[in-house]
Length: 145
Image 1 (cartoon, rainbow, N blue to C red):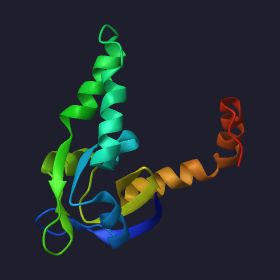
Image 2 (cartoon, one colour; image 1 turned 90 degrees about the vertical axis):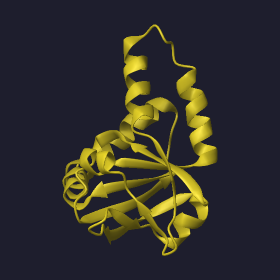
Image 3 (cartoon, one colour; image 1 turned 45 degrees about the horizontal axis):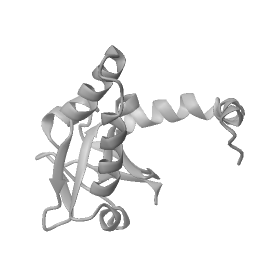
């Protein structure tokens, strides 16, 4: 399981160091794609396969399902580490997530998320105040902390 929050920098060539414990769980090859809320999602190949099967099961005749599947798969790329444990983030994904220099790497259960520091701070501040309200809504899904 991925968990935790780490501050990192992207170098001039678009390379990012991912925390060692995340690298170990991601394996030697993994998938990075556009995520929700203007971040990047990073999946180990086994989790990507599970997600791929779920997305394949969405009804092709529904425009929302087609749009989401296109968005998700068109941004996906399989990546590997360089010798220093860095990943080279493709330019289109850096642009999507507004990744310039400072970023935040989050462990979120079955995936890693990569955020621009500014976007994460804004998102966190907005969500922090609503945390209790969000938790109350999760009870509708038979979820309790």
